Length: 249
Image 1 (cartoon, one colour):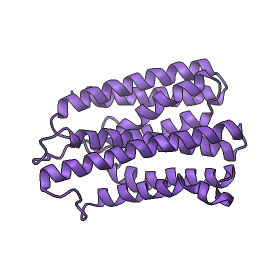
Image 2 (spheres, helix red, strand yellow; image 1 turned 120 degrees about the vertical axis):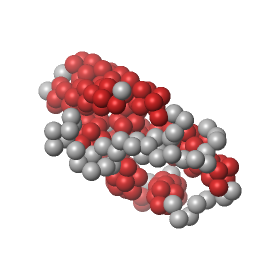
Image 3 (spheres, one colour; image 1 turned 90 degrees about the vertical axis):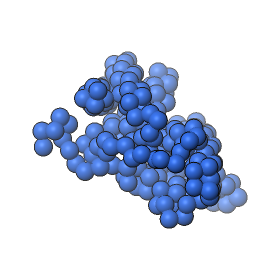
Image 4 (cartoon, one colour; image 1 turned 45 degrees about the horizontal axis):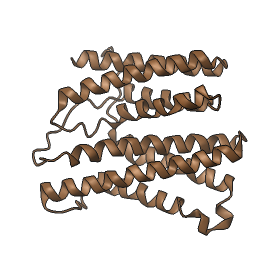
């Protein structure tokens, strides 16, 4: 079963890369088809992964979930011709990092007897995908692509990311309280980085209070910086050691 999980994710990664190649050649139809197929293969891998691990929580498997969620979110822009190679490039990059730096083990969380633990994880990966998408729109603004429309998309996706990120934190607090008797485990580095990202986007969503920073370019720079901070602080720690697909190295 583990081989099927790995092979289906490898197929998804290959489809993402092919979709990127089509986008670079301006073949949007082919890019959309391969992106969709890649997302379906990725979703199949995730479904089997989650099923085989349940009731254990695949807490450090977010690197496999984020490309799938982000990929599905990128299908609509590609269909509406507002997509950009940056969309498929980001999905491909995230999938490649997860493929080459796998973290395929599950830690038993003996004290969880609630679905809040799974809500904490699932809301968190959706929030990450939204923050990445906000960063993509920000990069497109900095590249001078449809600044007015992309600014709205950047703001809305950042707000959705903040919404799901907040639900993740709330669910994690409920899980901690039910399992350990305290809503906050301060010696957990995962909580520290999660709260740091939440605080950053709290400040980002209040930039309207500082008119000089509320203009499209400064906001875009900060949104892109937020995506980078989120990747470094919450995604990189989930990666494992380098391993070539198939165990060749």
